[in-house]
Image 1 (cartoon, rainbow, N blue to C red):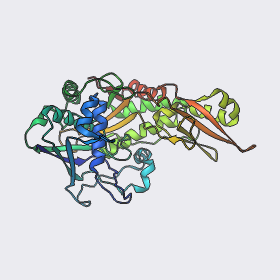
Image 2 (cartoon, rainbow, N blue to C red):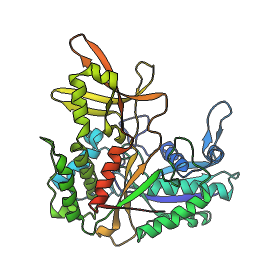
Image 3 (tube, helix red, strand yellow):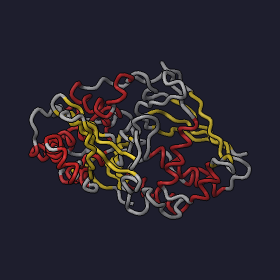
Image 4 (cartoon, one colour):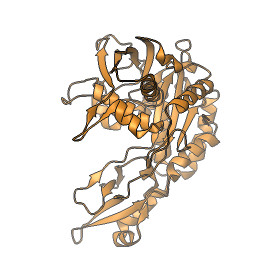
Length: 411
C-alpha cells in the first residue's frame, strides 16, 4: 500500500467545520470533494473519476485513496499576521462579509497540517498520477472551506514525503517566474489527466477557464488609472477606499487578498446598469414582469441582494415550476493567493490570481427571478432576469487589463 504525506500550511484564513458548526474541523471529506471538483475542471475521464474517488448508489463502491488529515500545530502556535490598514481592510471585510462575525473562528494563516494519501493496492501508477494532478490544481488554483472562491482557505505545500517519488512529475511548490512554472505543470497535467471536456463543466484546456495575475511593478499608478476609469460611472453615496502608498506593498497574503477585495468592491459599487433596471422594475413591476429585466451582476453569483431606500431585494436562482425553489449559483470568479518559493517578506513572494470559469450559468430547469411585493394588492411579482451573458465579469477583467493591473497566463 503506497502512502504519501503532504505537509501543508494555511495561507489565508480557512473556515471549515464538521457537523458541529461551532467546532473547527479539517475534514477529509471536504478535501476529497475539492480534489474531485478539480479533477473535473482538469478534464478527467468520468470512469477514472468513479474508480479513483468512488461513487454512491446501490452499486456504489469506495475509491482508491484514503485521505487522512492531521493538524500538526495548535491554535496558538501560528504566526499572527500584521494588522491591516483600516481602508484596506474594507476589501477584506467585503470578501468576508457573511463570515465577519466569525472572523476569529477559523484556521489562521501559518497554521500547519498534514494530508496523508493512502492508496489501495488496486491503484495503478496512472491512477496515482491522475489523483495528484487534481491535488496540484486544488492547491495551486483553488481554495478550501467557506468563501473559497473569494480567496479564503488558500493552502500551500511545504514538503512531500512518501513510499516513493512518483509525485515529482509535478512541482507542488510555486517558483518564479510564475508563467514558466504554470506552463510546465499545466502541460504535464494535460498530458496525464485530460481526456475530454464534460457538458456544462468548465475545463482548463478548452478556453473556458482564464487565469490572470496581478502586475505589481507599477501597482499604485495603475490602480489610480483604473479608479479614474470606473469613476466615470460614479453613483452618489458610493464609497471608494482611500488607499495609502504602503497598501500597495503586497508582501503579506492578507494585504494582497484585501487589495483584491477592494478592486471587486469598487467595481461592483460603480457598475451602473443594474440599479437603473431594478428601480424601473420596482416602479412598474407589471411591465417588468411582462418584459423581464437585465441584472448583469447576477453573473458574479446568486443570490444577489440589493438595498433600495428602506427596502431589501434579492435576485435568486430558482427551479422552474417549484415552490420554495430558491437555490444558489456559485461565482464563476475565483481569487487565489499563491506564495512563491522566494525570500520571505518580499512583495514578489506573493502572487494574486483572478480565475474566470465559464460554463452554462444555470441548468435548463432553473431561472433567475426577482421577487417584488405589490403593497396595493399584496401580490408578488416574479420578474425574470437575464445576465447579458458574461458582460459584468468581462467588463471587470477588461478594465483591469486596460489599466495594466493584470495580465493573462497563457498555457
